Image (cartoon, rainbow, N blue to C red; front, side):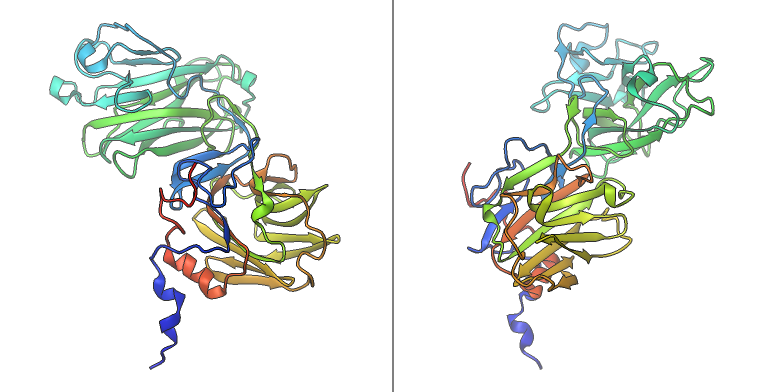
Length: 448
């Protein structure tokens, strides 16, 4: 029997991967962008969002195009106290959300049981609490809601026929049969009715007692008479949605309404276009390995002029050393030196809506591109490294906030690793098959 397998790194799959002296950069993005090796931190003008629960291995970083949140106080922190609407103070408290109106079916024993209210004690931050626990009071699954009018005229906020609008929020539930519903409440063309139309979905969470970002994208339909083109619009959040007749509680925060066809990270008001850059001292231009995980949260761009930028090393006057782009039908590596451009086709018809590990190695003019540990393309066109002086002194992860042709990645990136040496195909494959981060969560090589 062959003994060749005994020295293989593939037998280490599922184990934590060691990092050595050649590993010059490793970003975890679990809690803070400072979770890196070698003391290299994001530059001060970076614009990105840490997503603590949505990365490949815990947290991840979202580098996205800019957006405007139409909701006032989506964080639900603008509070007033001594609120006495006649309900049970023991169950619902006396704190009020100033920019939201919380209420239930007041005609059914308004002073009894749970209503939609704010909770300031359960977490380190206020939340909308929707306690669908009124069976004990003879009011099982009582209607309850929080609502906000965020515009008096939809044209004033740029909505027209065919406009894509996305509603998103953080939700936690006490059990998986407890959910919420939400919707955009408006008038029809002749002001004959106020209604949701098809704009009121219900959502359940995958796991209890864990924050989950839920979302729904709507298309504004004015030409068919569904909307009054100059009327108001409310956002409603309902807490009496359930499955299997189960009771439970839902908590909501970080609510967002934006004029986009996909959800982006929460912002209290306005977020600029994504930009995440680091000093490039950790990159060896002669040889090295770049590895990261990526999952797209938006549809693919429509053409090369609307490509997503996943990674870039150095840029001066539009010329960079290398750049990884996601195009509509492929991922391309652009290698530039002495005006030379070498495209590497990656894989076709793959939107990367699932987590994908991307690896690039370079040495002696040979560049190799891997997907999920498998070599997909290579080139040896360049004879001496990058075949010219290295451009710039920064690395850009997910976007640089300035490019018109190449948009921010509009996705989540996790576990960015840069080595100053070329890792073998076997090592790269073992990273993917291992399915684990390079370092345990909460254990880092530097203190900050």
